Image (cartoon, rainbow, N blue to C red; front, side):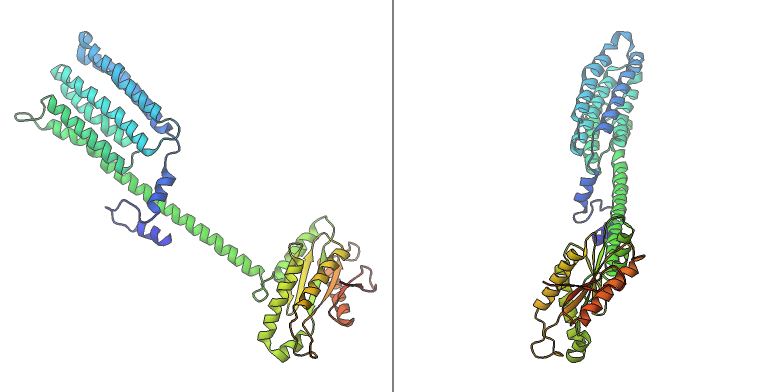
Length: 400
């Protein structure tokens, strides 16, 4: 899309059409939503013709005034009202062009007829007016360049045929009517320039929107990277601390914090190597994430340690999550080469639930979860312990 936009902005003056799919997109976005503008303008056009009856009276005189009056009231006004009706609702550009063309050509034909019927001294006035009608209409009506070609060529043809039938074109006549006829073609250049600038504005707007979308995506990627651990694929400690602080300020119960630590991980690194250690961290992270699921937030807290934040829960509920996570990791059956034959990778977990008496700040809650984790380690690893809120209380054990 970006390359097509750049090609569109760099296209030569004679290439009005936009490249690729941009032309269709431009037509879709600029399709008129209603015909109110054309309808209101046609009403003004009708009013102008009615007001011009006074000029017709002065030109034709009282005895022959009926000629322009019948033509205006019987032909011009009905055809213009028909064009207004055709633009109801949400008309297409083609329908609007047809309506405008109908009103203009009928008015031209009536004006040319008046040029042939009016006294000789007023004939030139009507000839000029007949050319001015499509000039004004073509400049005001919202015509595309392609539609303005149809409109202007039709108007020029009607004008030339009219003046030829009236005898103003031929041997012995001056070329003023032919010169005046060229006025009917002026809107072509105007509508070309208008459409060119409209398409340029569309392309610039489209590029700005594309850049805004790309910037938004880049910001989302940066936000994701700033909150995600690159190795484990879980949230990182930064996001964990932010979410814990947010929940801490809320008035609801909890939260619970679960700290997980991979048992004998240093020994695994020393015997199997850091590459194997990294692979194991990713596998353990997937198992822990499956246990925590949508209940809370799992983050890599540092090294081989993970933290889960479970909002609005109690020790028993958090214990069920931690025990499920412990069992899933053990069930992976990841061989630990540093242990006795048959030894597999396991995790220990410590749980603490916020107590508003002893936990003055989030760090106190995390410290109690850490104490429970070390209690699980001292008890033999591969187990879950929950920390009681009162200082000095013994840790609480959990079983599958």
